[in-house]
Length: 158
Image (cartoon, rainbow, N blue to C red; front, side, top):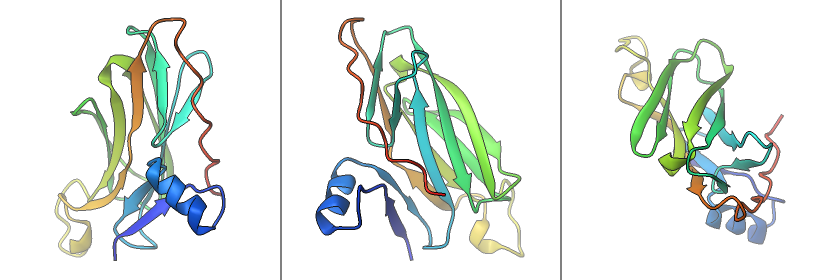
């Protein structure tokens, strides 16, 4: 029962459609499955969430935070610019994983994958299974005078 979770301004149909259009959300395997909330922050304090763009100079590095819930025993894979940036074993059901990503990567996204090794007792959490997948946070290199502040992402639930 794959489920799309969106960060909408309200529960009205127009707000939900707008959030979907902007890419503000993630897909999870099940309504009560793993959750992943991804954001990036520039050293000057500007932030962007999933679907938004964070701009900076070509040599800048941004801090990325992935808040993962209901995923103990699985792995978080951060992907930047088409390459695996990191893979982290998730030990608890509410964990934050951080990383540094160069603006030049173009985007960063997160995947929650099954357990690091096949567990015959929990086949639904096998190694290659996709448990959750975030939309990307886009990263854009621009001139110093052309770094508009992106729209603030909605607050994380809870």
